[in-house]
Amino acid sequence: MVGCTFGQPHIRRKIVADAIRHWYYVNAARNILGLPQSIGGEGKPPYPDATRGMDPNHEHPPLAKLMIAFSMLLIGNNGYGFRLPSVVFGTLSILVLYLLLKRVSGDKLLSLIATFLFSFDNLVFVHSRIATLDIFVLFFMILGFYWYFGKNMILSGVAFALSTLCKIGGLYGILVIAIYHLGKAFLVKKDDNESLMHKFGDLERLIITYGISFIALLFVMDRFWVGYSSPIEHLTFILNYTRALVAQSPTGIQSQPWQWLLNQIQIPYLKVDVNKMVDSSVVGSYTSVHFNGAMNPLMIYLTLPSVLYAGYLFFSRRDDLSLFTVAWFAGTYLPFIPMALLWNRIMYLFYFLNTIPSVCMAIASMALDQKPPKIVMGLYLIAVVVMFVVMFPFKAVP
Picture 1 (spheres, rainbow, N blue to C red):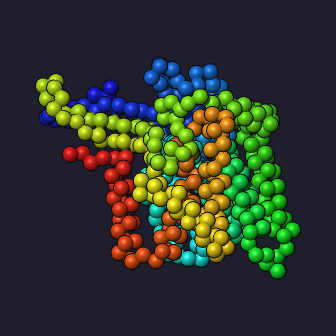
Picture 2: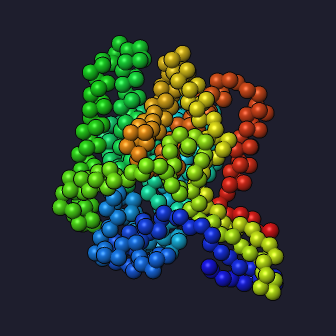
Picture 3: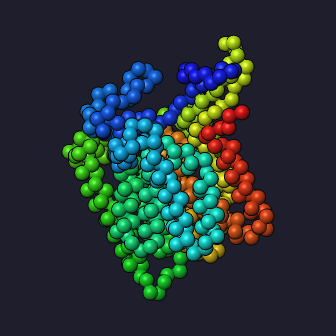
């Protein structure tokens, strides 16, 4: 309990749930900088045997933690220092997503609506304020898509490598491109001026660049900040660690992929209840802070109909945007279903973060294709903002 008094009546703050995962990554960054780690609930730091100056969090590649450490070196070992990178990359994700959608669709209104929805999703907002790895992965993934549609396969491959160097889930960006590329090659009418071999040549250049840059950069970071002599050694550890993440049934904040579409098993990253005290008696209470891992309900509940509608639009129009929307959803979400059904993989709702932009694209496409009255569209967008405010992590003090 953290006791604080603020005049009469007394007010006492109590942290009632703290599953904030950035404790591990912040302490990894502290250890990289040679700073003392913070002590957890059991009276121990998360990495008691870590070598000073090295990244002790070996289950993930080191890039995002190195960026957090660099920010802490510049700003300080405080909330601003370790949260600022997430704020920066979360904000840049909004800009790059808009530019990506405008490049793919050529429709400014659709791009604006989809980006607006992305900006007011609560899971995106929360992960853009805490020191976890996922927003870094998503930013570089979106950047890789942007350069891919700009026909710059070299930069695209490097961006996907940076995404994977933040967290191994960046691989799903390559899967999205592969699905889109194959769909473009075999399901869309062939362009007489562009041979099938040329299309696959672009994909080959991207994948080769991705592989070379990923291995080369991982080699350098492992040697300087992790302690592995080769990338293969580190990747083997990650693979074995991932294989061990199994459970017969989800417990606590663990969840199944199909539950994400219903916004179930939300994650209470941090909740602070404030009790009003008079003469040592509780006379009332309210929640002052609630960082909750959950999507905006007015968007997540439209996922299935909007993605199915995107599939319908593709088969009726054969356009790039609807194909890309379906490929993004399929590449970043569907792999988790066999993982859950066949291997009992432990998963969490925030794994859906990389899929959220495709949901925003699908909703915007479906809405504009139906040509609703402007007032209907406006009311929906207002309702999205209202729900975002309701779920906002910093609550108004009564």
